[in-house]
Length: 221
Image 1 (tube, rainbow, N blue to C red):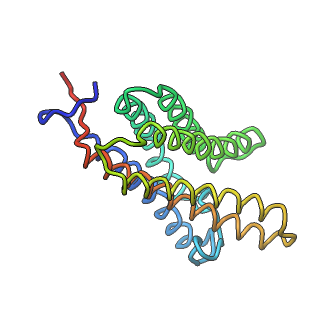
Image 2: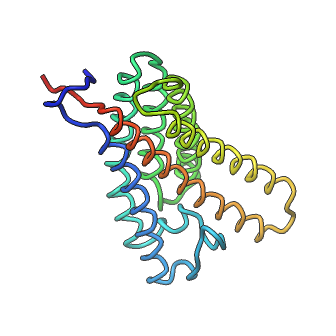
């Protein structure tokens, strides 16, 4: 049960661990892929030289990325289950988060494998991870609206991050429809993917602050 007791386990390290693990995994894979010559050296969040998947698809970077992201998927599912308990309602938060967690695990499991089936699983794994995770965020914000435990300024910051993520998604769709040059289109989409990943990590950091301020804890008895 989620309670606010002094002898219980605090919840805020969980979303912080998710943000840190996912960010570290992506950038470690990028550094290793650049080092080993699989991708060109650049700043992908600005230049779009490679996607997160492209950076983590080959060599040692692929193995370490999967080694880090698979446990992160488990933490993600646990996190959204605890979030639904903390809200005291909105059970759909747990289900949406569970789907996002399973999708992340599927994506990481088949990243770097060959074949049409595996390509399908990777593609829709990452789409479902971002999509259902985003819906879980929105439902969490809806449930936490007006909650005095974390404060209005923090709530607005989380809402602003979610709104920016939506704008990036719209920008990705617009780039696919309006940009004719395939290389430029790929670079725009890659850069937007990294930016979306950064915003996703920022949202979990803000949620960690939210739970820390609220004193949210998990009673083990």
